[in-house]
Amino acid sequence: MNDSLLNALQRCTPRLGEALRPYVMADTFKASFSAEEVSALQQASGLSATELALALLPLAASYAITPLSHFNVGAIAQGISGRWYLGANMEFASAPIQQTIHAEQSAINHAWMCNEPQLTAVTVNYTPCGHCRQFMNELNSAQQLTIHLPGCAPQTLHDYLPNAFGPKDLGITDTLFDPQAHPFAAQSDPLIEAAIDAASQSYAPYTRAYSGIALQIDGEHWVTGRYAENAAFNPSLPPLQSALIMLQLQGYPVSAITRAVLVEVSDAALSQQSASAAILTALGGYSLETVTVFSK
Image (tube, rainbow, N blue to C red; front, side, top):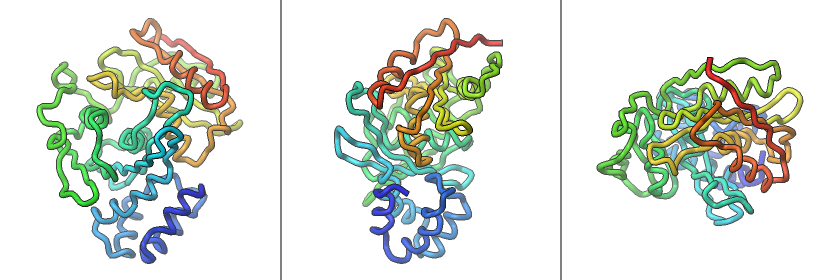
């Protein structure tokens, strides 16, 4: 357990802290709570679902990495399955500031990478910025998504983003969190195959520049990330950031990376290679292998 997570746990009310401890202290804890665990936490703490989500925000924010702003933001994405996914902002010193990850993106990506089919709500400890509002507008549940903030009544995403520009304006009907399956030729290398699988599930309806990445942790473990494109382009989440979110939330330090493979579709309109290589260099001089694949 990281020290920040332990400190956040100690700042909870005694009832909630006692209820949380068996989950958070477990080696299997991966920054999410199942529907059954959420229900058990409600019963033990006496909190409503909304109150519990707000009370868990310091836990989510404990995963933040903020060498630039020193401003930690936590978010919780609530899935239609009942599972709650934590997320936090991440910054990369010596890399372009545009490559930072917002807390809402982190929690949403967490749910997406765990194959959650739809989100019902996002709880965050500060008002979502315009970047995040636009990112959430790409979701297949954008029309119904509820935003919860401390001290504020719940509001819909479109209360925060009226007259929004999004997928429907560009004729896109399969949106973020809808299943994606882009077939690419298989490879014998397991890490490359993991990156191909991530690319095959990536979301890039505007450029079709499907891409995925796999970060080797040791001989048997890796994390993957998928590209999540946005109608406004700038809020798009690159595959490396998607993987780094999962690395952090699963408790691995960046120093655990031993190999990184990026997979991109042939003749794509854009490439993730240069930006991904720059971040990996900034994080510790890690090299990036790039593999080009062709659609079947």
